[in-house]
Length: 541
Image 1 (cartoon, helix red, strand yellow):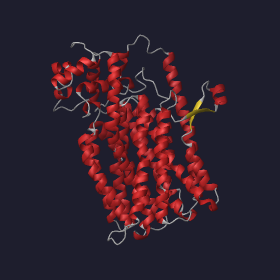
Image 2: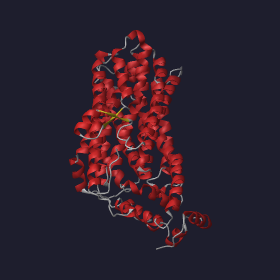
Image 3: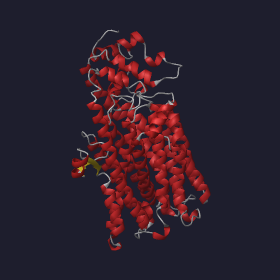
Image 4: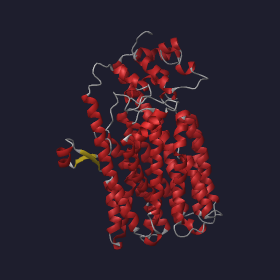
């Protein structure tokens, strides 16, 4: 065992030697010793954690705050900007629709709905293969390369002149972009503690709101461009695609693959970063595919509750994001006014995603944000525990009911109801976080995430087809179906949360943590055990 010293001594030694800590100088960096080999991140994480045991725990806690701040201010913005561009690429279809897209490409009937769905057919195709690649290859480099591909594909949309060409390009755009959401769920689980993850996920997904604001303003600005050879709707694709392509260089160089290679952290700080997330009980990443974990993932009732929620959230996302401009235009607004009136949608999403993210960090308030105790009488009588139901769904639900019922004479009130649809980001992001939080075992987590996004994409494909051209601008069938989807999300989440609470209670009654040290529990998290195999794992509710 190397000499034990506190972190302040380590930091001093680091400045003297220029690398890591004294122990690092004596032993050499783990990454240096593994250079030229395929790195098993779980094994590497275990070594980092064992080295952290040399330091004073109180000092580690103080340094952990500094490390968390570095991750928040240096890594999180990289993720947020990438996700913003990803959403902006998807939303270009919605903004370009206000400037004659359908007329120029000779779309008729429900052709636009099929173009909207094409992206999610591509996402569905790529969902599980991307999970396998993410388990085996570095996350940062993979995302960087894909930014080049989807930026170029976004620009190619400006060259399309017919319906079939648009469907083909949107399919490939969806397939390339399918990597980013599961990659960031995985990376978030590797860099932040379980208590921190829902808020951090809310941060990087809330920028969908910023993308909506930028996209609406961009569309508004492009609408004022005259006497150019390129149609305004084509300019939107060229500008957004070029921005995405350029950002790819930044991500390729600076986005980490885990705590072991965050460029902003010293070697000692990387040890602290692994120590911070050791209590997650989900390890870092294991390259080997374990068939038994695939079977467990598909037989776990919790997985299927998540998959059903994914379909419902997908329907809401696919429907509202692609048809918002059509709904607002149907109230009698011009293309320019329609673009400008979509700007507040982004503000609603940006603010409320973060608000609900903060609320989700409260004890027993995860699973839905914000969870309030409803159905109390039923639960007291039958479950002895109140069920938690997400109220993050309520603003969107109220908005849909308003669109369906408010008279056309109050058209600005109808527009405000449309703004509420930006809140779909809140239940969406928190449900995306759940597989990363409550699924252990890397192959099991990969499987659950892969199948989850297949169901999510299926919902996104269904959503646009609920909007029948003959029912504009109310789209009664679509609105009623989406109201039902919100109700299903609330009910299924209540069941999921109650199920996890019962599992935690059963493990607590068994006294599985009795006589086991904190370090033993933490090390077990790096052994690639599933949440069912690891008796010390607790679900977050």
